[in-house]
Amino acid sequence: MVSKVFGRLLTTGLVLANSVSASTEAANDDSLVASQVVTNPYEYDFPPLGANGASLFPMRLCNGFKLEEASIDAIQEQLGAGSLTSVELLQCYLERIYQTQPYLNAILQVNPDAFKIAKALDEERAQGKTRGPLHGIPFIVKDNIASKDRLETTAGSWALLGSVVPRDSYVVHGLRKAGALLLGKAALSEWADMRSNNYSEGFSARGGQCRSAYNLTVNPGGSSSGSGVGVGANLIPFALGTETDGSVINPAQRNSVVGIKPTVGLTSRAGVVPESLHQDTVGTFGKTVRDAVYALDAIYGIDSRDNYTLAQKGKTPEGGYAQFLTNKTALKGATFGIPWKSFWALGDEDQISQLLELVDLIKQAGATVINGTELPHYKTIVSPDGFNWDYGSTRGYANESEYSYIKVDFYNNLKDYLSEVENTKVKSVEDLVQYYHDNYGSEGGYPSIHPAFGSGQDGLIASLESKGIMDETYYQALEFCQRTTREEGIDAALKYKNRTLDGLLVPPDVAQSIQIAAQAGYPVITVPAGVGKESGMPFGLAIMNTAFSEPTLIKYASAIEDLQKSTGTKYQRSLPEWRGYLTRNLPVIM
Image (cartoon, rainbow, N blue to C red):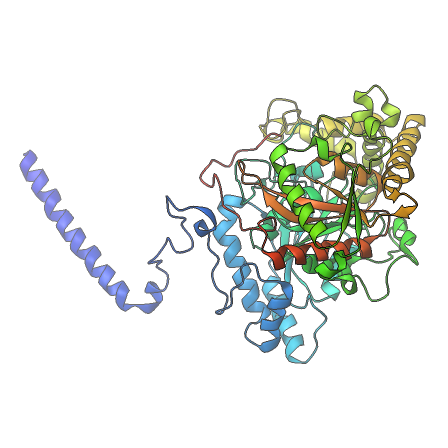
């Protein structure tokens, strides 16, 4: 009996095998069907086991053009020559996103109207109208930057899903006017790190865990995680992010790209989900200083909906910032300071050693670098144990803590922002805290429930408990932090023997350095400077200066970048190695 059944199964199997063979042959004769079959899966879409480095995820050519690492100028040459259209360019970047999204999770949402916009931009170009260097160039923005289209603006939270913003943010409007193409929204740390103080950088409920292509098992940098990861992995030419305290510079330097964090008041925050109007600013990401500056030129300006932008009147250059881009010759005669005890002494030994070799290269190009240009109050205001935005309270002085005013500002500023947002029941921090309590199982509304939010929503609760009251502690903390980081901080460190230095060189992976500039509201630019030997994670070299000193920072950042490229030093941007790409995509608690 068994042999008869086996015989029937064998006969059936042979018939099925023959039918499959026949159908395969038929498919081979059907070009439409054959075109849907991937015959070489390992070339691009399935990283072969045993492969290493950038070869794991090679980027396809775009109409024969090598899009990987291409600058905006190089892309414009192709568009201008007719070798490439914006529609084709968009498709190529989407192919890259489709290729990497299961691993990186950098893009939270794709603009459903992107191809329609690309076609319209191509039509303008065909009619002889080119809006500038960003015409037809795709970009992404962090999901806390509003766009009045079919994209969501949720700060990564399910709580704001379906909410309707009143208008484009000022910065998105500026980029649309410049001809740039909004491809979508970038992943971020939920509520830009405001909801929790023990959290996984780059994680949001809507987007899951964003990963760096350099090492998928560690902190990717944040809170503008997707913006940094997207540019660093060649998913997009440039991006926007926001910074209250390190959230542009940190993900930029951890993904080997240029990050520009402007002076508070240079870029409008109107239409941006806020944390603190005292420190919030919109910044740019690019693979080169020039690319990041092109984006900056499109978004800065005075906006009637953000009073802080009035401060830039008379302090911004006519004709924009791209005119200050230069080359390595600008380093001859420049003088920079190194606040060694303030920041450098706190850095990783291997990283600092590599950065000092780059500093030596800068000196060989003709610059003078003075060691020991310290911030007068560094022993008081710089945490020796890593980033701590409540360091004043840690020392026993809440009236000297950044967090004392940030949590109050968030309560008030968020309420103002939400007052204009429609189609949502969330109108205050109270509503937000209640939402996370009501959905605590999935959202981690209490400590030790969600792996990405070890402390639950303690940041939101701290803001709630403040009730937005600007009391004596609030004003004392604000005055202390601004004074000790501005005139008695960065400005004082820039003064050396009756002269003013051209900038302070700092290691941005020492988060306290960028924290000081954030409290001051001063600008910072970071350029890629190397890769950690053990982690494979990049790090940068940053320049900081006083308020509205962007022309100086751009001049010297572009000069250092040119020096890196012209000398071929290893201390510059490098392609990601995709370390740990098969590791499960679980949150990475800091």
